[in-house]
Length: 216
Image (cartoon, rainbow, N blue to C red; front, side):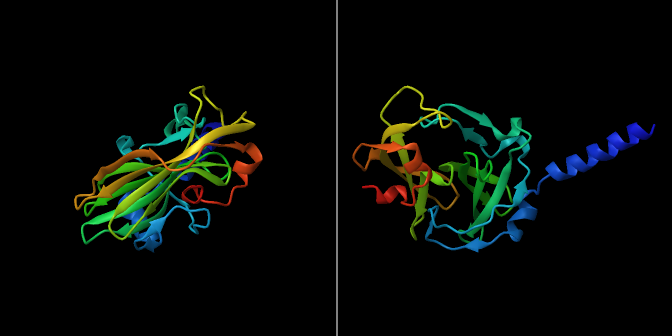
């Protein structure tokens, strides 16, 4: 009987630890930013407010290769989840939230999620992917709600694993979206190459201090 009670108590404690906040509760707890914004190597924010993700309304992919074709979902891994980094008010009826999926050390994904005044998810846009402490995908937003997403794209179609690669040949692309008044991310400029091709060693990428928009 004592063992059963202990198991129940531990299970409840574990469930409490894993439980997260809903958006209505979490948004007032995090720092509020203003436009312009960027996810840069010098960005300073704390992502420690774990979010619930009912019905998987917010995408939760954590990638395992440079092509961004191999991944697992945070919902399927007990050690991963969604954390709210900061919010930005876009008018009186809309929040823009930066959410991190994954941890600090392992690869993580960042999404911008628009949330309406009823704290319902409108739409999400994937805007960041990390390798160690460096970004292979990151974004900037200007005062006009234009979101510039930069990505390091490998030249090879053969999967390049984050775990085993020694070097990768790649170039930077830029894709532009505009956030409309309803919180939708509207594609305004399709993905285009904005840098020359070069080879990056593993050590260089893992210690890179430049942002992708500086690699022109």
